Figure 1: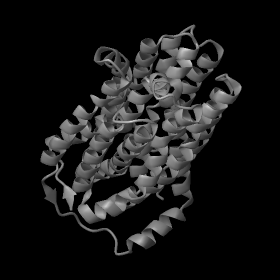
Figure 2 (figure 1 turned 45 degrees about the horizontal axis):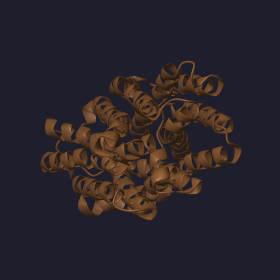
Figure 3 (figure 1 turned 45 degrees about the vertical axis):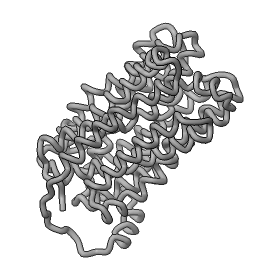
Figure 4 (figure 1 turned 60 degrees about the vertical axis):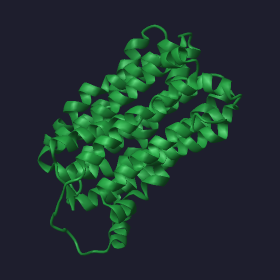
Length: 388
């Protein structure tokens, strides 16, 4: 069974996507305030930036199982409800409670990360690039809003707790619209008689699937280091908190128009290799700018960094293009996100530890450049037209 690809379902997809990074960027934009308010250690601060990726990886492997038991539409609804609860729980206590809430919120996000692209492929097969672009643009817009607005909201509402709590409201809206928009289903032809366990094993034996997984890990490492630590990098260079949060918002919002047309372009191209390499070189220039002169042109550096996040929907589109059926898309997505996010969780955590040990952002940013080099190589390989 597939959800009917109605206009309301497309709206529901966009609203759900708007909430899939707000837990990360809202936290990072006031991370110093949270750490100070909770008297948290540097290791805890590093852990809170890595927690989303860890949770994304662990929960993503459960998404196909949950979809088989409940159906994709119901599984996404349950996941949005878990996200809503997690966002409220995380502001209700101390460091441990915040970690628990972050785990819950990130677990809900992880299932949506895996299953929404499957819904897009099943329900909008003739508009794959367009709807993927809308999904990715909405995700970027939500990320940008949380990054830019959380610092002033925290000031206006008297603290970071209420500044973070307000982001439960758009999740509630998305959940309501999803419950309405995902009610109608249609029967689709089955594609294989092979057992789910056998198909999963075959996906893990595919070299191209591992290329996709490592590519996803590389782009996630870059994205979550930037989302988790860019405000602190800017603040340590002398930029005030609100401006640093706004610049993180710029990094996210610049991807909105890019995400609207790049996936459609990628879907039309026979090979996406050159596109991936180009979208890796651009943020590398931004990282070099942060290394050499962070306050000389911070707006330019953040714009370039933001353009690099546009590779996320391209990778999602390529995973759909490299699979023959929605079942394979779900399996590849679960593998790439489950394993990829676990690998990428090392990035934000190590970034905080290395900075704490050295007192400088030079080595962490050089490591980001190394990750981008790996991303370019893997993207060039995965961009060639073939199937897993």
